[in-house]
Length: 162
Image (cartoon, rainbow, N blue to C red):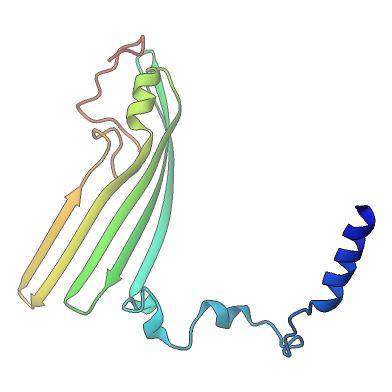
């Protein structure tokens, strides 16, 4: 049986042929693979990168009040796109984390996460006319635009219960 298997393997390998590609010395160009010569084939071809701007900010703070303390870290990404001179959109998204607090796990779970702070559409059709539609959201007003501070809704006691 071993002899028959060996002969079968030799016979099959001698009659099979490998695929030959004639361009084995062609240099690889990674940039051309990512960026197509035909921009209309891209999924986001309608977006002009020169009209897009993005900036980030990081805020770290510690607040203490009474027998309580809260450390807060906020990373915010601001993105804006200008469609033309009359229309633009803006978006602020934040990642909020409280690595240390004396208010308990319920506070930590309620504030940690990703938030859409602001989404705004600005339309300026003429010199004296402007329309802005804005959505704004912060986690129960626990932090303000500077990444720290507490709002009027903070109602946590010393033992961490709400």
